[in-house]
Image (cartoon, rainbow, N blue to C red; front, top):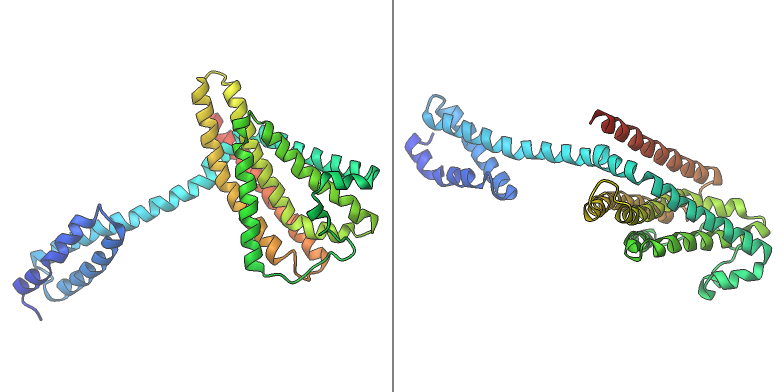
Length: 310
């Protein structure tokens, strides 16, 4: 056993360092906290009634509260972001999200109708490089380097979503154009697969990731349209204050959009190319659809409840 005075002299600097680090770098605090906890354990064993034991017990308790109390607060803040902040932002963005989604669906319908009426029109709608890569009779599950493909798909989709969001700088004109063109390009491909009776196979390749992907990009476009509307129709707020609130809501929702596109990219890379039965892929598509409908419904209901409470 070490004498009390020697024990205090040996480890006093460590204890002082922990006192100073409690409100500093958490990584330093964690390491010092572990060391001082072992000192406290030793002191409790050999000097249970000594003043140094009471001092170390108080010091370790303070450090524990700072470290783990902060972690709990961080977890609560993280949970609040998805259960309150995003729902409130989505509730305010909901009409514009529907409008953005409607523009995309309208583009899909126009693409289908145009190419179905005049198949040669696809050469005007799609780049030649893309047309040359479409082979309806050969399309199907295939082997790919999934991790690399996932990274490329996610990066591209996130870029499209961010550009759509930034379209508010064009008073929403570019956003509307982007939503429409994205839909029309997708719709123009559909008749090619209908013509060779492979629409079910085409749908099984598109829908599992497409449900989440189209929803995410439409939400990004909705954020842009919301910002434009709030700027030109500030209601009771000052114009810049109204725009600022819309942009803050948009930034929160872009976080959700990014997560959705990561999910879509993962499905597109690891599930779409796989030789799974069609019904499994349709079940995955249906599952994602039900999940997002449920989550967005929760967003609207919970935001309404909080709005009434205030």
